[in-house]
Image 1 (cartoon, rainbow, N blue to C red):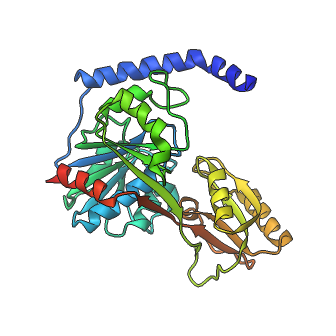
Image 2: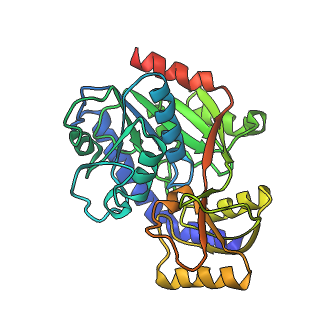
Length: 336
């Protein structure tokens, strides 16, 4: 408790400065002092107030699937965090190398064969990579703070299992709760039982009384092999993860009945280096299980099949809506 208080005290001056800069930036956008670019097609933004880990990328993927099923040609725009050449704009295919695409854009491309994924230094420049004009609607992944591009629907994801940001002071969040006034829709994630989120809903509605709120949660699918033909019918596993909160992934494996014999947590967007791969292989042999499991985002960074009898696998993340018709209705109202 004292440690947390001391950390908050240390961060307070930085948080005040960060919040002041953020508020000034938003004020300049609100008053039209900073130019906002507009695409010819409608734009739907999915973002958050937190630094990460709210599930906005799985929500983006699910929105792309829904829109594709509705008959729209979907383009997904991303900066491609972590890619090598950050100044280049290009279209991502399922076969693009992850270091050229970024892990999340590559995952989105593999999950959504009907959609197209573009990366660039900015979302507007990413859209310029689409040269044939065959897009009906664009989705911005992680777009709430990217105000340089006009959007027709502004959606914010809030994790029901995490605390809300304060009204004004932002750090360790990107923005304070007051910024929800820019949103058109709040998606509460990791909330299978909305009645348990009454306090969270009340706090949101005190800031934005008429804000529409819809509920979603994530379910873990069955383990899939990274390389086709490998058998993954074992319960003892070695696990690693490079996501915002890796312990969530490890606990999800436990809930599905897997026995995690060893786990390795990496930084968000991180990939195992040679020493870490050697450690995973060593733990696999020590625990007599050839099955190494990771997240779908991490799996796109696996470049070759191990030649040591190791089986690499991943757990797909499934987005579930309390009322799927609600999100479809928002899309229909925006696009029609």
